[in-house]
Amino acid sequence: MLRAILLTCVLAAASHAQSQPNFSGTWKLNVAKSDFGPLPGPDNRTDVIEQTEGGLKDKVSASGQQGKQDYTLSFKTDGTETVNKLGDREVKVAAKWNGPALVVTTKLSFNDQEIAITANWTLSTDGATLTQAVHLASPMGEADQKMVYEK
Image (cartoon, rainbow, N blue to C red):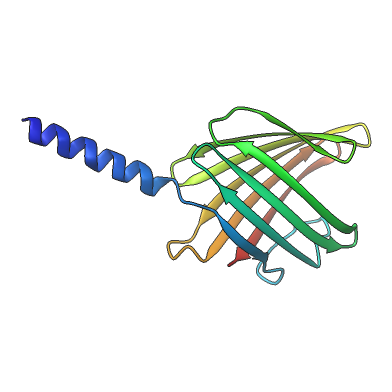
């Protein structure tokens, strides 16, 4: 009986560990495989992600129609909201695991409009592709995007 309980605990822990992939690494956006919907996408983008047990740091470098952007977002993965500063703009980020997907919710104000972004991060089974299914909502409307990154 004790052996069965221990086996169940070990299997549950292994399942939990597998259900939370590690997104650490340098990820380059594959613009051709991505779909930016009605919004202009970047010409190129690289994310350097450092994942720890309780959170992530995502260092972004991108360029395109909106110019060059370099910024870092840090956030926890337990659902706690974290405030980041991008220049003079405050960006609130919360992330929570949903099985093997990390659901990242971002809130910010742009031109006095509140914008909410929900991104579902998933990792391919071989660990070489990070996909972010993104939903943007603002008073101006809603849009969906799919961003595909490769190591």
